[in-house]
Amino acid sequence: GFNILIPVIDRIRFVQSLREIAIEIPQQGAITLDNVQLQLDGVLYLRVINPYKASYGVEDPEFAVTQLAQTTMRSEATCLKYPNLHVFVGKINLDTVFREREQLNENIVAAINKAAEPWGIRCMRYEIRRLLIHLVLAVSMPRDMHMPAKIQEAMQMQVEAERKKRAAILESEGTREAAINKAEGEKRAAVLASEAKETEQVLDQ
Image 1 (cartoon, rainbow, N blue to C red):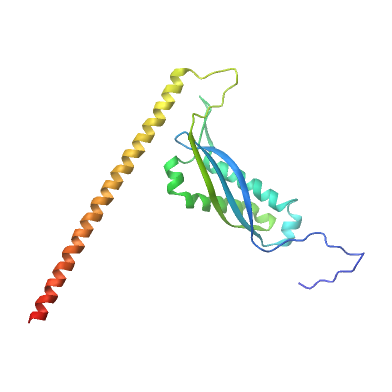
Image 2 (cartoon, rainbow, N blue to C red; image 1 turned 180 degrees about the horizontal axis):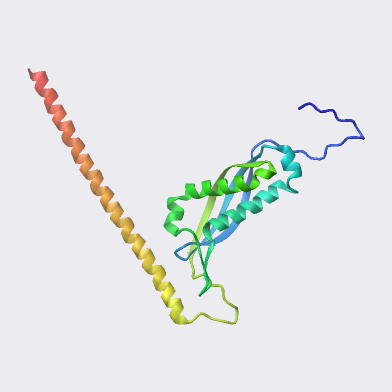
């Protein structure tokens, strides 16, 4: 609203831009359910919707949201831990990361907006920008200890088995889709041929 500023006596304490701004989220590491290590970074688009809350609700709004986005992105991928081998795994596997990338973005936005509401900030959207992948066995152990070779071999075999299983499922689904598309195409062609024949018969009469 309209405000009067008296020079010397009054001074501007905070200035908040109401425009949408983009903030780069630094790279974060995560381990998926199938023991694939990911390195993700992204871009967060946000806007101040309540300047009062943004000024008095948090010390540094942009820094707070950046930290929140980092922890949210990490928690979406790494939250479970097996107590026996201290193996950190994620909520999702690698195939899900690619197949539901947009859903991951939406989940991150929803979590950020829920936590950042007291700060007067709204996350408009979040986009995973880069996704680096390399296979690891993520184990938290003391530096002076080594995992037995048999356990390493067993874990590696499990990872490979999971990958082969997913590959077989994807190949089967692809074959099924191809067969359905072929059948639909043949059916459509038959219908068009029948309609063309009926039209030709009508014209000949």
